[in-house]
Length: 359
Image 1 (cartoon, one colour):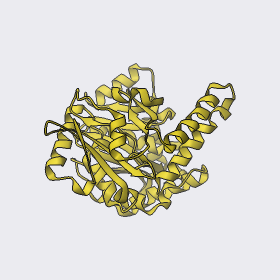
Image 2 (tube, helix red, strand yellow):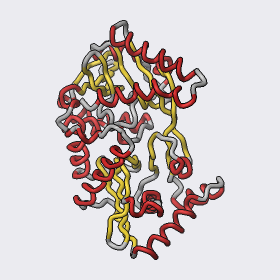
Image 3 (cartoon, one colour):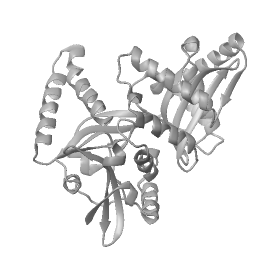
Image 4 (cartoon, rainbow, N blue to C red):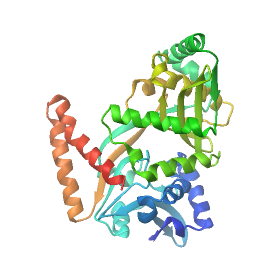
């Protein structure tokens, strides 16, 4: 087994075809595992244009695996961070690989991961914690999904239908816009998102210009094979909610969703998701991945959970020493009965990683 290190610009057409084929074989069908996600990030004129690298695994001349990373400052992180919701090795099933050899090939001290798919066995010894992504499986169609949700005891779809009727009575005709190309509505979505970040004292990821460039590029490259998918909900001619997802073939990944606060009592974002699910059933989409987060609406809508993990792979280095020290503090606090204070070191690590990733 050999490991070649390439830049996105060095990927050949054969490499892209091999990667796409391995993605299908591995079952990692989410758009974040696509070579086109890496290429889009490299086009965005941000840190990935300068620092994205690809570890390409070859066995007796056959290309058997791809692992992308942003390599900078003695450490590696996901390509597209903090916009990337999944990480992992895209490889031929059963191919053995050593994560530490990948780190060595990247010539860094450590590789950080925040949402690495949990079932990748070679990484198990490096995982320091786990969480779950909430997924909606639509492989049997919307009606079967809705029946399954009712049988599980959740009434979110019935409540959403009532709110939709109430919204229409009180504000006028509701219009669902699948695969919208309305630039003004797209811009409004991110005005709402930035207001949310400000109100909740979160880092505004859109202050980094490359993040906006990436989103605009994907909005303009909407394609069933790979690209953005923008959905809108209007009430009485006024934009009530908008949702920008990533799409690859039959998989949608929920990415950014927001609504007009004037319509908040109707839960327009959930109404919009339900309309997307109905559309998906006839548009060849069999999965909507809601991504990580224990939000109540996600848990109520999801009928499948996907385990993901955070941690790091390190070699003897200053970068590894610092990361391990931070995890020891985090692990100690999380083991103590300190209430909400137990989570502070973990939050601090995530915030520092977020700022580091924005470049």
